[in-house]
Length: 190
Image (cartoon, rainbow, N blue to C red; front, top):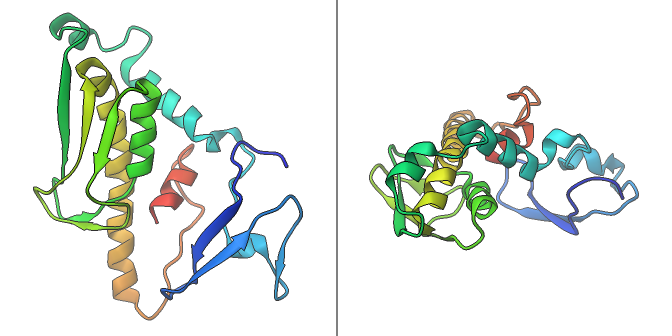
């Protein structure tokens, strides 16, 4: 099986219902009542832009460059440990928690991240829904990238929820028209 992401099972919502269906993925094409598996589930493409670690590394590189955060290095003791909190700036649907955690782990595997909410939960302005502990330098390097992903994904999730509620009982589905390099991230938010 080719690709950068291996999934042994995938739990998908039955379109426009609350039931869940589980499909087993294999190297061969799967059929379900004459409908191809590909039409029922979004398989991770084999294109390199769908490598989440690659997207994270690129975002971190764009944000701090090859020198790192020079302000942080000049003003904060290297070994200083802190606790930072995730606060909701607006009411909405939170998304991107797992991706944010991947960003923190990419920067510093010793960082500890805790969440009181999960992707898809409704959050309200001012709610503290997560925290991260560890070296201040590591948190400051990761936080802007993690927050950028979460803000984008939460915005998509919030608008999708509003459209789905307005269209009910019709079904709202994602499109392939997404930002270059972020297709998987944008579809994940839906």
